Amino acid sequence: MAKKTVATLQKGEGRAYAKVIKMVKSPKTGAYIFEEEMVLNEKVKDFLAK
Image (tube, rainbow, N blue to C red):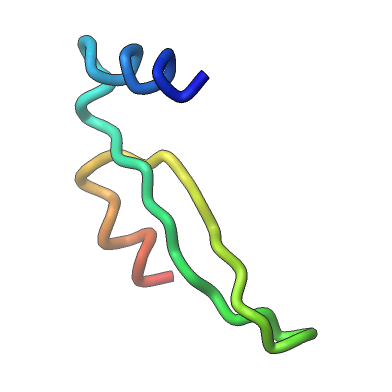
């Protein structure tokens, strides 16, 4: 399934997106969780700044 997603994103407009993974500390448990999101290349810094 990942191969299909990667192949799809490398064609046309897919190159304008990046998969960003951010580590965030949970306020309830104190454990770290990971937030994943597909964002435009121009908005990567905005996503990481949140």
